[in-house]
Length: 304
Image: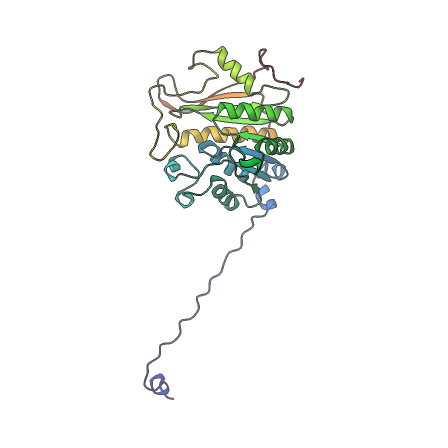
């Protein structure tokens, strides 16, 4: 038998490597498979949430709401992802410079493939050149009327009040989460047509001029806000893991509204403190109370 060298004109040939074969394991990740491991997933598949504000609190909340099974998320935030916020944000370097809505949509699609995500890209209250483009007020009125829950993570009292007014008019419940400089804790509030609204909460804050008292946000008065290079606004300083407690508490409050299978919360304002009286870190101490509508609030609350 002729050698390979003789048959190829004196050239030596190497045997072709065999194609590697791998046995891939099959996995099940359909809605029914996920629902088997959750007490609320099936309930949430036909629920919708409008989430506004995709910073530290909002990004964590958005991903977790998807994981829990919320069927439709509408995410609103005009900003782009700055990787310097990675110490406390759900996104990472791969999302640098992308619109937060776009980057979080991709992340949610991987974490919660059965959640439909919409991402209108606008800034609340922005001007419309020559009257063209989407009317943000009309969009919010229509969207809030059609959604099951508004989730506010803007940490902007003006925006929170505006959203609360729209939610109240539409008979749509709303969850609002916030933290403050130092991330010593945070606040979770539930606004409902027959309960308190954002303006009620503001009146309760006015009633307590001592900013260290409930329901004010825990903060560090000795810690200054910072304005990082390239950033147009001041921002807070703190850890990433402590605000995550507030975000997940907000998700819990949202699930209590959305899922009949989950217990109903009997409070509407919770202040979470991550420090004890001596300043030592604690896993979280929650002072939650049910407030009545404030007597000074002029909003059109529904009778309970």
